[in-house]
Image 1 (cartoon, one colour):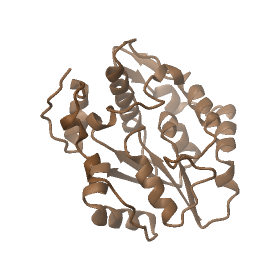
Image 2 (cartoon, helix red, strand yellow):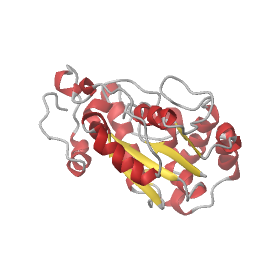
Image 3 (spheres, one colour):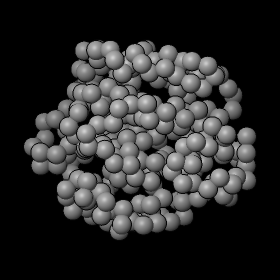
Image 4 (tube, one colour):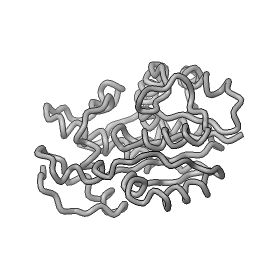
Length: 245
């Protein structure tokens, strides 16, 4: 029996992967919303807030995750995650999993609780990711400290950086693959082939919207922040930016 989860910040295009898995016969929990998120989400939200208690902010936009990487996982956290995943845990399907962006906020402990499942890390150009609002835009709602700001785009950008840095600071699970949203949309056949090799199952092709790639180019707001640069270089996103902060 194979279990799968999708890691990635909200508005990174993770719904495309959840819908692909569902269309391919993978049980993604029940009920699901239009984004392919497993509901109800409150237990996972509360688990993320427990995790955040042990995250230490260092400097302006840096955080120390040493404690969460080394400490015993609180039983309360484990119970909340198990409660959230009850429909997945009880299902007898050969292939099953879940997707909700908030999983990323507690990724180090999720990886330790489920060391043998398959993780898909979903990446999208941060300039596109911060154009739309998401529940995780204000990290304080999940107990994470960061410099206060009234700038909505900056809040979203900080959330993006925090989640990216957290994933990168965490030892990778045994089964791990990274997928760019842009590759899924523009090179779906090749990207699905990579995922099929990783998952060991045949994947369905879902409709994709090519206009979802590069929306930042026509966006009128600020969509680039200098702290995006390292991640953008790693994942091959072009550096030119029409709206810069």
